[in-house]
Amino acid sequence: MPFIHIPPSWQLPEKLVTSEASFLNRRQFIKGLVGAGIAGSALPLVGCRSQASESEAIVGVKPIQAQLNSAFEDAGRPLTNEVLAATYNNFYEFGSTKNIWQAAQSLPTDDWTIEVSGLVRNPKTYNMDDLMGRFPLEERIYRFRCVEAWAMVVPWLGFPMRLLMDEVEPTSGARYVRFTSFYDSQITKGPSFPPAGFLPWPYTEGLTIEEMANDLSFFAVGIYGHTLPKQHGAPIRMVVPWKYGFKGAKSIAKIEFIDYQPATYWNTLNANEYKFESNVEPEVPHPRWSQSTEKLIGPGSQFEWEQVPTLVYNGYGDYVADLYA
Ligand SMILES: Nc1nc2c(c(=O)[nH]1)N[C@H]1C(S)=C(S)[C@@H](COP(=O)(O)O)O[C@H]1N2
Ligand SMILES: [Mo]
Image (cartoon, rainbow, N blue to C red):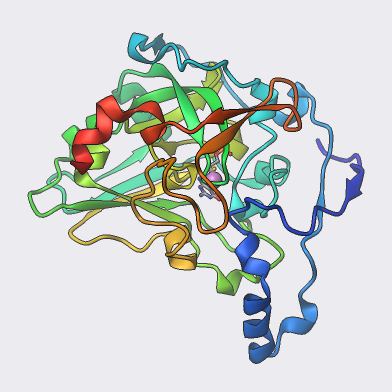
């Protein structure tokens, strides 16, 4: 029983100003529930926080040997503290607070498989040993920018998405790719509000074929020198650093090559706030907050941070601007 202590808890601020989820508990939504006759059980969001030590929050990981890619050895900003990155997460399958690292430990990652299917010449189902042995693993230090206007800098370990594409060979009809995260309603219970039936599970994300083939697009199987802790999206997640963080689906179970733009989780919930493309664009405000600056979390806690300007394409324009010309 690793987590038997009872952490101190208190109520979260009524509404975090820049929360992706906060529109979910607005009056409008509650009115909808009243209509459906189930509002009586709706409670305000209550969260608990606990102090995490390194040994508590970063568990079940194994070291990974990988070459640092010299093109991505300097993000121009300090690396985020590892424990901080592992204890300030978004993973709605386990709740809508930043403090889900503990709940995420129930994600079952043994015997993981990833099905790659759709418009490809060589459909395949991989297990993690397959994947990690098949492609040379490298380390890349990327800036990371959540649409909620906080940012980090993290060292990912993994391989370019392009290598997987080369193997499965998308056909000429493949124009988009849908990525589907692990979902099991008994395990990934989601936030306590709104009820699971109101959320478009499983979590899905999408890219165009050209975006997936871009040099930056990466499958991460590790972070900070070891495999991914569950809260970061073990055992494999997407990393697309010129887009807002929600585009990087965690704990990928299925990858499908398709000929239409797929519906995605946040875009389905609120298309006005979360566009399919969602590149980092400082000049384009989120309907509920500005995107012109961001808070760089750390060094020591989420309450110590530096306000820095947001960079166009999160500073990766040299790699991706051509995609949108
Ligand atoms: N399956 C899944 N993937 C997800 C999310 C999620 O809730 N579920 N949250 C996204 C959001 S909003 C962000 S900012 C990043 C957070 O990644 P991190 O917790 O590893 O920093 O994961 C993204 N991928
Ligand atoms: Mo996010």
